[in-house]
Every structure is written in C-alpha cells, then in structure tokens.
Amino acid sequence: MKAALITLGVLVAMVAVLPLFIPYPPDAIDLAGRRAAPSLAHWLGTDDLGRDLFSRALHGGRVSLAIGVLAAAVATMLGGALGATSGYFGGAADSLLMRMTDTMLSVPRLLLLMIVAAILQPSVLALILLIGAVGWMETARVTRTAVRSLATQEFVLAARAAGASNARILTRHLLANATAPLRASAALAVARAILLESTLSFFGVGVQPPAASWGSMLYQAQATMTTEPWLAVAPGAFILASVMAVTVLTDAERY
Image (cartoon, rainbow, N blue to C red):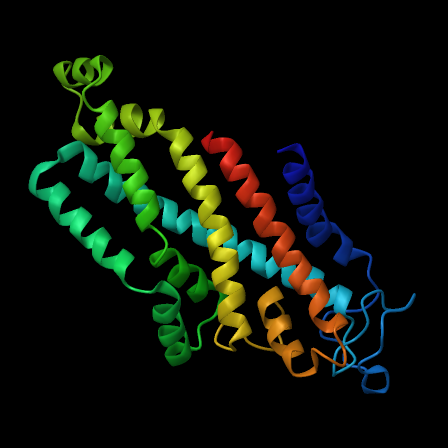
C-alpha cells in the first residue's frame, strides 16, 4: 500500500510541478527536430511535429488525472444518491432503481461512450460528465447494500423517532456511516475513468488535438510503434502506474 501511495503521490507531484520547470511548451512545434530519440535535450524524445514528449506527457497527465478524479466524483455522487435512496426506502423505489442499475450494467459502457463521443466530439468537461454518467452503477450497488444494513440500526430508529426528516437521516446518519465502502468505490471509479478516457482518446474520440492526454498520445504513437517506440512508452507507463496504484489503494481500503 505504501508503494502505491508513494507512486500516486509522485505522479501527482510530477504533473503538477514539473511542467513549471520544463523549457518546452507542450504544443511547441519544431519540425527540424521531429521524431528525435530520447536525449539530454528531450528526455523522452519528440513526436512527429517535434513536440517534446516529456512536456506533453506531464501536461497530458493533468488532463487524464483530472478527468479520472472528476468523473469519479460525478459517478460517486450519482451512485451514492441513487443507492442510498434505494436502500433506505426499499419497496417499489428499490425495485425500480435496481432494475435501472442492472439495465445500465448490461450495456457495454465503452461502446456506448464511443458512439456518443464520436457524434458529439466532446470537450474535456463533456468527457467528465459522460464518463461519470456511465460509471455510477457499482457505487449505487455498494451504497444500497451499506444503507440497507445500517437502516435497521438503533441510531437510525432513534433519529426517526426524534422526528428527523428522511433527507437528514440519509445524509447525516446513513451516508456518514457508509464512507468506507464509498471511498473504496470512488477510488476504483478513478482507475476506471482513467482507463475509459485513455481508451476513448486512443481511438480518436476522446481528448482532441492539440490538447494532450495519455490516451491521445498513444493514439498519435500507434502508427510508428515499431520504428519509434519511445512515443508510446511514456504515456503507456503513466497510465499503467496510475491505474495500478489506485487499484492497490482500493484493495487496501476495501480490506
């Protein structure tokens, strides 16, 4: 767990701080230095437009991590609200919301996102909302289970007897005591969102040029993967490290 936490901390620190000290803007074109191999001047080499890959990887990391965290926040809020409502009220509301959840789980989210993104050519904000809108189902199920187990506890019955409203019971008593599974679900949603954004960008329907993300960098590198492999190494390594670190932290939080 410590290694995962350190890895994630280093990644966040790198994308937040290092771009301030790199002399190459991420979109600076230098056709004379295109497709340069890694060197002291360009640590990770340059792409087919002569742009510094290290600079683009760090700025792209800001986009990829921001999409991952914010999309996970959207998914957690949606899933938490729906799951808590389902678990607390039960009955017809529970049946309706869980059938809706099952229906959404049966739809391949990547395929759905690719179709919508191909039609809309979404901005970064739209990508956050789209990924969040298809990522709430697991959180809803986890929250429902936690709330159902807490709803019969004495402190909830006492709050109800004291005249507390349903909204207060849900927010101040039930969700406040279900933070552990919510944190684990939110962390897993971050890893899922990073992978979804990377996949969408890899297929050319995610973050659009000239903006960089780890997925869009892989998309731009696929044509020269055999001749200039360094174009794909950095974004691929960053995606792998971030997703693995978040997954390990999720497992530690869960158990």
